[in-house]
Image (cartoon, rainbow over all chains, first blue to last red; front, side):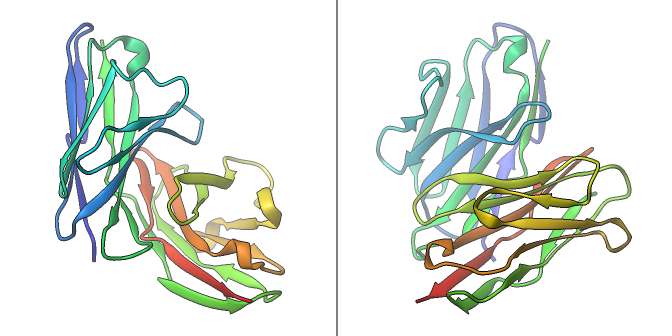
Length: 116
Length: 111
């Protein structure tokens, strides 16, 4: 079945640095990728939706310049947390849709980001 | 490592039929359990969640789920489905390894 590989699974970085999270669809082409964030004891919050070859659509309250999303190919989308702060520490997860089906979203395994 | 298994990849029902989607998880510690729904072209929405307390959890849109610890299950139910319930449903478990999703069940409701 469809697999989305998300890396890294865990990352610790210093305040002020940038961190890139990758989501790669391994056996299908992903036209749409959703990026979510989960705060402690909360459910997922949608951050942005990206479509291959176009700019991401960000949800209200999500800083575009801080959370850079690039969906340059049908198999790769990246989320870069720029100038990270401790409050950016969270669990980030992506979800991709196979372009050949009208359903079938597949999730990455998630990234635990800790900013110290 | 924790894991989540959803029994049915595709379910087709007629309107007004009763629904039960299976979800089993594998994890030895304390878990938080979730059911999410994703309508075509949209992002995930939380249907319901279980953290502790009453194992029968009621969510939005008439959905409910029952946590049976001895069976490691968290099945989703709805007494009478509607055409608008056509969507992808995901069970998720949060444990020490973070949040793990099942593969999803595509539910189609026929008028």
